[in-house]
Length: 143
Image 1: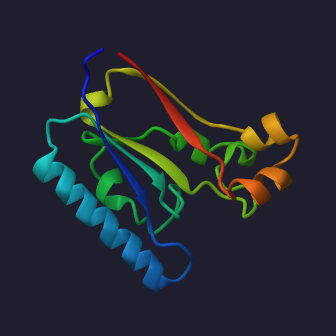
Image 2: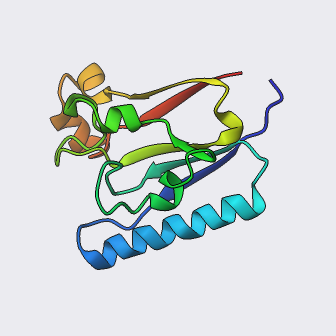
């Protein structure tokens, strides 16, 4: 529909520990500064393996969560919902997120964890072995 989107695919530092959490927080600060400075009026989608929980305290996503008029994690309902739909079933946790900028708030969107392991392999064991230990999280945007 001739709509331009800026999509930033990220992979934050993995593993527990204050040093890694500090790196994830620093990444959030840098990304938020970049988006607000250079992409302020663009349709921005930030997605990928954030390697941290949306519902956590302290939270490495505070630079985004502290600005609800500017950003929204479209998978917040997944993160606060049933573990059956979390993106990292072997831990279990929900580490893969989709963040949109306020230019997209008014559009209709649907965010889901794709249960590919169950759908195509009958279980997560084969999917985890051959494809990934993470389930994909997808968004459908309706203009």
